[in-house]
Amino acid sequence: MEKVQTVIIGGGAAGLFLATTLKSVDQKTVVLERSERVGRKLSATGNGQGNITNLGVLREDYFSFSENGAARARAAIAQYDDTSLVSHLESLGLLLITDERGRVYPAGRQASSITDALRFSAAARGVDLRTDAKVTDLTDTEQGFVVFTENGRILAENVVLCTGGTVARSFGTDGSAYALAQKFGHTLTPLYPSLVQLKTDPKEVKSLKGIRVPDASVAATWSEFLGGRMHKRTVRLKGDIMFADYGVSGDSVFRLSAYLTHRIRDGVSLSVDFLPSFTEEKIYTALVEKRKNFPFMPVGELLGGFVNNQVGRAVMKRAKDDLRVAAKTVKAFTLQITGHLGLDSAQVTKGGVKIDEVDENLQSKLVKGLYFAGEILDIDGPCGGYNLQWAYSSARTVAAAIDEKIAKRRGQV
Ligand SMILES: Cc1cc2nc3c(=O)[nH]c(=O)nc-3n(C[C@H](O)[C@H](O)[C@H](O)COP(=O)(O)OP(=O)(O)OC[C@H]3O[C@@H](n4cnc5c(N)ncnc54)[C@H](O)[C@@H]3O)c2cc1C
View 1 (cartoon, helix red, strand yellow):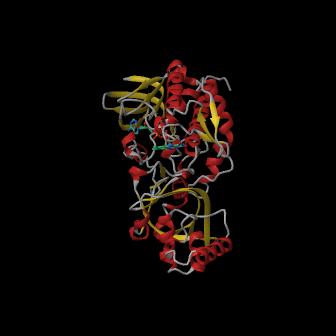
View 2 (cartoon, protein in one colour):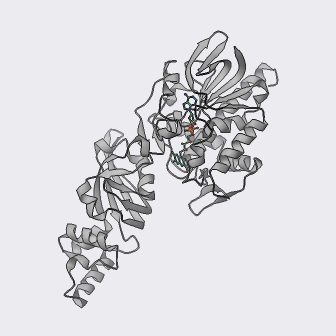
View 3 (cartoon, protein in one colour):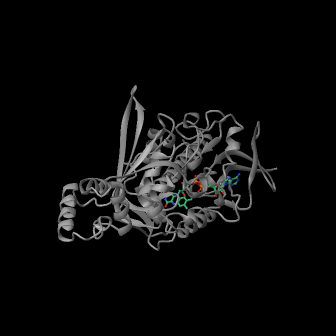
């Protein structure tokens, strides 16, 4: 049987990055990717433009079902943050640019250039990248791990599971690889889609279908049990909101969904401020003035010129033609969230292999030599480059641990 030092299962963001940062590749490292190409999802990130990280990465909250999961994510990211990532990618020959929201992209705005940089670098370092190599089973023997693919078996001292989560299944991440961890006794948290469109009562949005409102201010509110009592929590952010027959989407909704999808059953409401630059009083005064100046204008049209006409009519319908209520409603158009569009529409998995079952090196506490990196673990971040940064930082943590283990054995430490 073929014998190698390290097998990386999954040639996505975390797997490829690991292959470019692991120092001990001279001991033979193999990446096994089930698809016909490595990095297919990576090449589609950021609408094809590749939003690889965010300059705010150390300030943002990561989410985990485990109490200390977010702190573990922060620790790994603090060890290898956006600055380290940017200089590593620059050393691989990329030029990077940052937009006004701190999102970092390759200057050519092509996500595939990141995939190319990683795969060429891995190959140049002697890492063996094998495609069409789905791992079907993994066992632990006295000689090491036996990794089974559809084409054969490999004996490895270290195995790193970089198989992603269970969303966007067309990219090879259908969740079947969780079984490789579960067979060693690892357990999964509940799994939810994140960065996904949200459903509302279709009747509430029917008349708004197809409308996109740029620069709205959208707030999500839910109740949370904290410190022995219920607290109301609100997250508000600015961005586009789009209305569809099922509910809402757009940049603001995608970003908010990261806080919400696991809470929908407990009750989540959205409140859209269509005119964040104006106070309610200013809008009310303007409406009163308009009605005075145009007494024959249908009341449903009075908000025309302030907001999109269809939005104006929907607001006036709710306000039952009361101008005071209309001014309030245009600043707080509420929608109850009833669901999400599901795993195939989402970008990230919320939940995964329990973080308490891995040590600070992301090595399994249940079987030595088995490591995890990326979305397979119960950690997810908000929209804007945070999830790729987690994939890279966690891969870097694993690379450092394997290198140290090998160096120790060689007596170099
Ligand atoms: C459309 C889209 C856009 C996104 N945009 C962004 C963005 O702009 N910024 C951002 O930060 N995040 C973005 N994300 C999220 C980000 O891509 C993921 O969080 C990240 O790729 C996770 O990296 P990973 O290596 O853990 O998993 P993945 O990149 O999903 O890679 C896992 C790999 O494992 C392979 N695999 C699975 N099972 C097996 C098996 N049994 N044997 C062999 N191989 C297997 C899969 O084929 C896949 O290639 C986006 C996601 C999507 C779907």
